[in-house]
Length: 402
Image 1 (tube, rainbow, N blue to C red):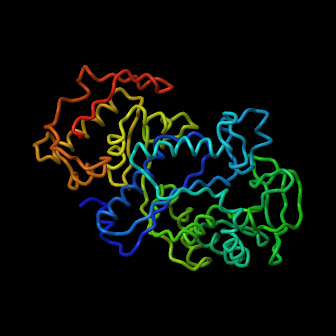
Image 2 (cartoon, rainbow, N blue to C red):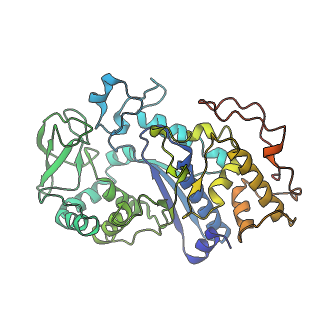
Image 3 (tube, rainbow, N blue to C red):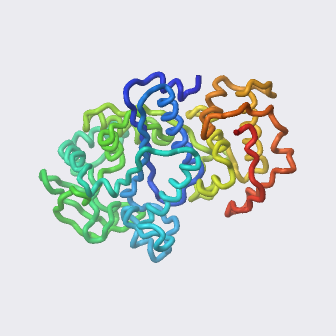
C-alpha cells in the first residue's frame, strides 16, 4: 500500500487539504513537490470515499525581503513593502510582483493534473475583515503568544512586542514596523529605520486600527489562522518548517493555545537537491518550475516527486547529462512492472500506487513491455544545458503511458 493510501485509510469525515506559497520571485521546480503531494493525498482520499477539498493560497502580504529582479533604484522604495503592493517587474502584465510570480507558478498546475477547488490570496482576505477576529485574539493574548515563542522556539520577544505588523500609512512598508501597545481597538506602531537589515523604515509612529487590511499577522500566527478560517485538516510542508522549534511547532502551539483548535495532520516532505544542496533559483541552483514543465512531460515529472516517500530527499540535476533519460527509464520500469511484466532490478513495494498517482488519468490499455533505455536511444534530443530551457528539439516519448 502506498503512503497516500495509508493516510487516506487513517482519517474519517470530510477533509480540507491546504498549502500556500510566498511569491518572492521565480519559483524553482523543487517547489512543485508540495502541490503534487497534496494532489496525491486528495486523489487517495477521494478514491477511499472520503470527501476532500483542495485549497491553495498565496501569502502575498508578506514583505519583500529579497532583491530578486528589483532594479537598484527600486530597492530602497520596495524592500519591506507587501509583495502584493510591489509593482510587476515585467510592466503591466499583472497587478503586482506577487501576482506575476505566483501566476507563472500556478499556471503549471493544470498541466500536472493539479486542480485546487479554491485559490485564495491573503491580500484579498485581509481587507474583507475575515482575519480581524484572529488579529484581535492574538493581540488580546499577546503575553501568551510571547510565552509560546520563548517556550517552543527560544525566541525572546520583548514584553512590549505585540503579534501584528502594521502596513505603515506613510511609506507602505510592513517589514519595518513593530507594534508596542494595544488598547483594545487600536495599536501603537513604529516604522523603525533599522528594524531589519534588508529594509529601511520611514520613522512614522502613532495609533492606528489594525483591522480591515491595515495590518497582518506574523507568519506563524497567520498560518494557524488559515487553519481555523478554512477548517484545514491536512497540511503537508517542507522539512525546513518541520524542524524542532521551527515554524510548524510554533504554529501548532498557537493553534491549540491561542485559537483553540487542533492543528492539521502534518506530512513533512524533503527537498529536491542538486549535489546534496536544496534547489534555489536565487542562488543559481536548479531550474524554474515553469521552464522544466516544458522539458519533462507531466506524468514523468509527477513520478519524479512521488517515487520516493515524502520524507526522502530527491537528488535531481536537470542540467546533468543523463538525469532526465534516467527518469524516463525508471518511469518505464514502473509502467512495465505495473502491467505484470518482468523488469530488471529490484522494484519497491507499493510501486503500483506510485505509478498510478503519477498518471494524469488511469491507463485504458495494457502498457507495453519495458522499452530500450532512453539513455541509449538516438531519438532522445534534449538540450538541457540551455539557460532558457527552450532548445527542445523533439517531443519526449511517453512510453508506457496511454
